[in-house]
Length: 320
Image (cartoon, rainbow, N blue to C red; front, side, top):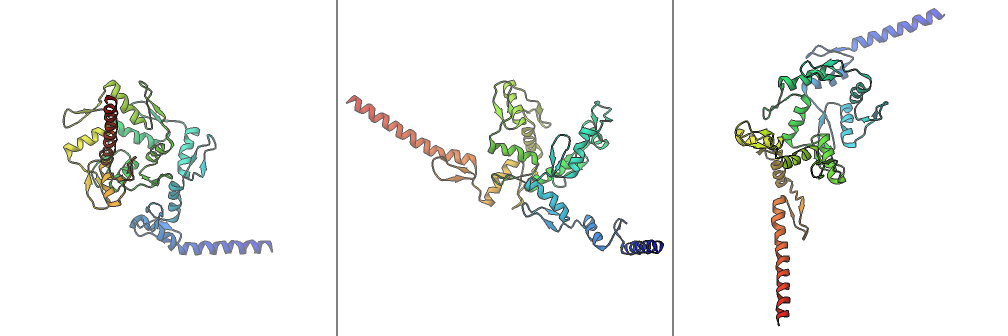
């Protein structure tokens, strides 16, 4: 009886496997074998680029519900994957796995140019581009090239001006998590970087380094087109666009292009109607800081005039 029962179970298992084999389908694009037509439908999105799942927070399109669920953690800031060694949390399992190498892995991959060591061969390969100057990831909009694919992806978002990292305080969006973190210091007032020469505090490390050059007079960045030197890299890039005519920032409303991100942001307020600068003396609001400053002089001149008149009347009274 036992042998008969075992035989029946094996027969059922074999039949099940045969059914599954019959259901298997092959992708005509790449030859990959998939379990069934449903799996093939999902797989085909890789080739067609179809992204039917849309984020309700930022409008980003994703290929499937799983990817959408992972993406939503950008907005909710949920970090369900925690390192058992140091307690650091991550939004994605892959990031935790990469992080765990810090605790468990040996840096066996060594750069023969500078001696720096890395946990993974891919990290070493990426690092070597610092020495070779190789930039294999070109932007299709402005032809600017990057050493890393993630840098290219972040750069491409500057053309659209659309960010997926949202500030919970003011709802402003940012292209990278690091930019959001820096922005949040406006609300918290945090200024963790201190000038070693005058103790002035800054919310960004780059701001502090740029400020310190005011003391030292250092201008390490030289224009490749003329002899002008500047104190920070951002100003150098902005200046060089005068020579190249490059306008990498495009308005998502009217396709007008700009040479710097600040000008694009100011321009977009024409479309959105946003007026972030409010007069401290009255209820008038302005799109640009310069317009606010010009307007506020109306109030300060009035106060000065009233004060002068009062002083003169007192003097006249005293003389009588």
